[in-house]
Image 1 (cartoon, rainbow, N blue to C red):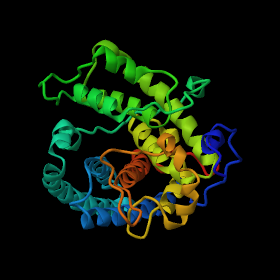
Image 2 (image 1 turned 30 degrees about the vertical axis):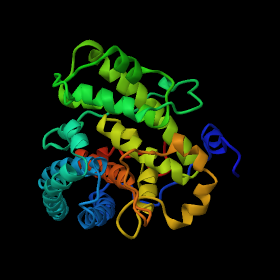
Image 3 (image 1 turned 120 degrees about the vertical axis):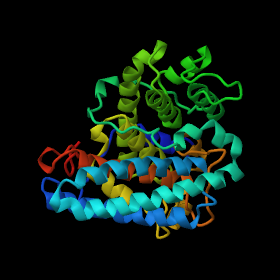
Image 4 (image 1 turned 180 degrees about the vertical axis):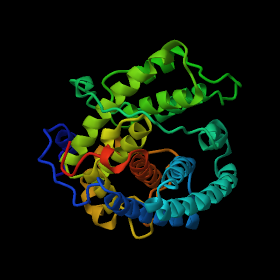
Length: 354
C-alpha cells in the first residue's frame, strides 16, 4: 500500500458507485429543521473549540470562523420571518453573537503571534469583507481539464505575494487590485489541481470582494467557473476513495470556496453527512487517531493532497486549525443555502444524487 503515487493514482480512477445519504430530504420545514439542527450542533461544538484555544488559532482558522459569522447573520435574518423557524433563528443569533465576541478577541492574539501576516491579510478578518452569493449556478463538467499536472507545483510564498498585491496591503503601500505579469500567469495557469487550484479560485474571489473589475478581472467569472468545475471533479474523486484522510481538507476547502462562488451543486446531502461524521470529540476537525497508521502509508502524497502550511496549527491531539476553519465555513454554507431557499425549492442535491 505504500507504492509511491498510489493515492494520486486512485484519485484519477473512475468514481465508485455513490452511497446515498441517510439525512432527511429538506423538502419540508421539518426536514429543513432537522438538518439545520445537526449542523448547528456541530457548529456549537466547533465554536467551543475556538473559545478553548483562542490564543493558539492562526489567521487561517480565524478567517473560516469569520466567514461563518457572516453566514450566520444572514441565516438569522432569513429565518426570523418564518414562525416555524424562529426558534432556529434565535439559536443562530445566539451563536453569531458569541462568535463575534470571540473573533474580536482573536485579533489581539494574532497581533502577538504573527503581526506581519495579520497586517497583510487584515481585510479578510474585517467585518463586511466577505459577501455571500444570492445567485446560484451548477458547475459545468465540460470545463474539466483533460489532463492535470502530475505533481502539485503550488508555491504558498508566490500565492501569498499575489494575494497581498491584490489586497494592496504590501510594504510598498500599493493600491488594491494590483496584478503583476507574474501573478497574472500564476493565478490563471491551466491544468492545476489541489491547493494550487483552490488558491487560484481564492484569488478571484478576493478580487470580487475588493470590487476589482479592470483588466483580467473582467474575466473573473470565467475563471471562477473554470476552477470550480475542476474542484468539483477533484471532490468527486475524493469521494470515490472514501475521503481518505489526506483528501478531507482540500475537499472541505473546495466546498467552502465554490459555495462562496455561488455553485449550489457543492452542497450535497451525502457530502454534508460525511463532514459531520469527521468532527472530533473536542469539536475540531483534523486527524483522528485511527487514521495515524493509514496516513503513514500516504505521507509521501501529502504535498499534493493536504496542506503543509507554513503557519498551519496542528495540535498534539490531532486537531487542525485549517481543517476546522474549512469545515465550519463549509457547514455554514450548507446552512446558508437552506435559508436561501424555501423547502420546495431547495438546491441541496438529493440523497444519492449527483
